Each structure stands twice: as C-alpha cells, then as structure tokens.
Length: 207
Ligand SMILES: [Zn+2]
Ligand SMILES: [Zn+2]
Image 1 (cartoon, rainbow, N blue to C red):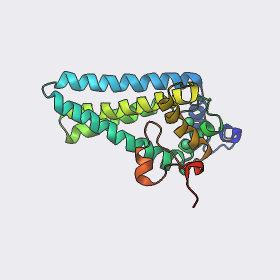
Image 2 (image 1 turned 90 degrees about the vertical axis):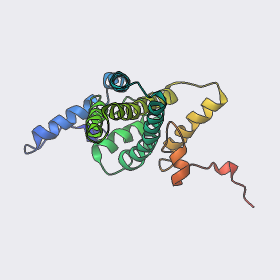
Image 3 (image 1 turned 45 degrees about the vertical axis):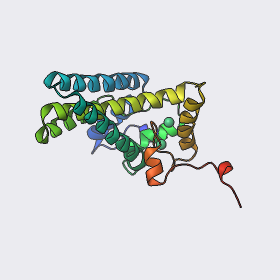
C-alpha cells in the first residue's frame, strides 16, 4: 500500500510521475476530502442556480429533468464503483483500495477532478441541448455525486439510531467485507438490476 505512494526513482518519467504522486499524496489528506465535498455541493448548486436563472418558465419539466439527472447519476455511481474503483485503472483503483483498507481514512479523488468533469459535461450537453436543460441535467448529476459523497461520509462516521438508516448503512458495510457486492451506496437499485445485491446467508432457507 505504502509502495504505491513512493516517489518515482527513475529519471525518465520522473516529472510526469512526480506530479501524479503529488496528486495521489494530496488525495489522501483531510483537507482534500473536505474541500472536495464542499466543491461538489457548490458546483451542483451553482449549475442548478444558473439553470433557474436562464429559464424558470417550466417548473414541472425542470423537476423531471432534475429527477432524470439523479437517476442517471445512480447508474454512474454504480458503474464507477464497480468498473473503475474496483477496476484496472491504477489511479482510481489505488485510492479506493486504501478506502477499503482504512474506511475512516480520507482517501478520495483529487478535489478538482469531479467539478472539472461536471463542468466539461455541462459544456458538452450545452452543444446538443438547450442551455437551461444542459445546466439542469449536469447540475442534477453533480448533486447526485455530492449526495453520494456525503452519504458515504456519514455511513462511515455516524452511528445511526433509526432502524432504516442502520439498514441503509449496513448495505455499504457489507460491501467492505464482500467487495464484489453492494456497489450502490446511496441506493441498492442497480445492485438489484445487475445481480450484485448481497443476500445474507442467514436469510437463505436451506431445504
Ligand atoms: Zn466505504
Ligand atoms: Zn468498493
């Protein structure tokens, strides 16, 4: 684990890999974690606010686009967790491995990365959709991401008293013991759809 953060000793790719290692080191700090979480909410609210400012003449359509964005994000959350964070890309996989080993650590994506991706997404959507819809859809996806980050934060750092909240948190704690199950953090929707929902053996009838 510590190996992965050790600075490159070769001379050839030293500068490039040095930058990557510096980013990797920064990504494990509490400051990066908190700034990132704040930036995610700020960017989502800014995009939603901008969408409202550009066009607020069709509130029902706006609500539907907002819900569509949250739904799209629920799949992004699942897909990224399953195929990227538990996948072959070292930069992403490495940080998530650290999280699995130290659930209370601060390893996360570089604070600037999700907002940059969301802003690029907004720009790309604006090429094919009306500006207000593009801002609203990207803002909703960004909101989904910010809520996912906040959910993950409180799942690991809070002790819930409400039974439903405890069950909700338990689903993700199970993922830490069975990394090929329960990829959804905010909801189990895609685990149900794609067959990765963890079924407790104690609840399986053997007869
Ligand atoms: Zn976790
Ligand atoms: Zn995981």
